[in-house]
Image 1: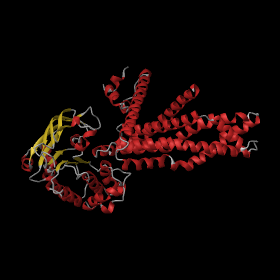
Image 2: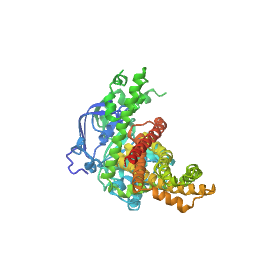
Image 3: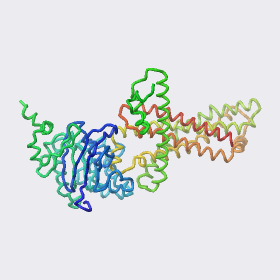
Image 4: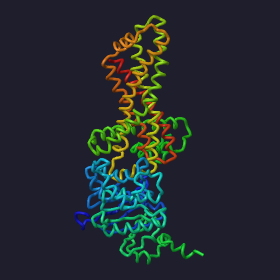
Length: 262
Length: 292
């Protein structure tokens, strides 16, 4: 956990978010957002609303185009290679996984640990095996990502992000394209991480999830925000989400679909 | 006339990022002067980008030689195997062919005009200084350089580079440094094998043509024509070939944002620029030979 729990994990003030692929294009303007340690946030938005870019910025992978972003109280503009340990307190799971295709699932998962702590494959095998086993990935350990179904690739990407035991985990549309059984597994596992998982010694992990479908994320203790028309709006808890008359939010809850279905 | 208008004011940005895609994707200009201007800008941007990328890579090699050694050293061994050991059978065949085409014919021609005493210096100039290194560089460029661009371009297009950065792994350190070191050492070693193989097979073909030259005389002439500078410059030249071929191919694969459909075009461009870079380096070394 953070050394000082009063310091927010993520603190954005007047932040403009540029597109990852084209830094001259601003996708979200004036983001003011505080994420306290242990919170579970769901960022809702339609396709191309800038969810991924916001998360990439939050992960410290690109600087804000304007405004200030403090990660655990430190301005991210000053975070260089010397402060890498600080940046590794935040983990990222890409939509689709973005696994390294040349490596097996076990090598993918162990790579961050081996690189950051300079371990041989034999030295990292124990920790990797334990994590793979806990996430039911052990039978796929020696298979390359191209030969694994998308459901399991996404799960392997989660394992790869968890092996460094980050305090904050950012997940970009993690349920996209998953089957019902896997969606259920993910929701249970993330809930467990949020409450405190044994892999993290029972410490809760701060979670931020970007989603284009809000229905699976219904939970009284979660916090919700909406991205639309280049604006970031904090909605509040689930009650506020349900009470909101925002048409985009209703679409993300698929209320239109349910009311217009025959 | 000026390209600032043609690319909607993004020229400054393009220079800043050395992102030649901006110019390449812009609509074709109407006049020849504009086309010439675009080519000139593209050339300058590419030189700037390659120079910056080479310096960054060199900096990472020097600064991080002890970082994550248990991950990077096996990757370097893997790349040496790929750009060196795995190419040995092909180089054996090429050495035989080179010996037959160049050495065998030269030995035979010199013997016919009674100039066999010039054999050593001719062999050293043709095979040791020029053909050996250049041919080795071109073959490695074709076999491994193209694979570099495609692998890195695909990795970039599929978001693997962002994934490395998210995990705190320096993409230059993990992806580029092993390739650069592997290719530099690979081309150096393969050139040595190619030269030895070509000279040996050259004598074999001369012997088959009944040229009155004993192996002792043949190799004595070659050894007498070789100076310490030949060894030093051969090492420098082949390492420079390997370094810059790796830089050019990795730069085109990795340094710019790519879409999957860009990968094949970028591979062709990288090979062309790789050939040009090798010829330029070779020309610089010719000047060095002439001066010394």
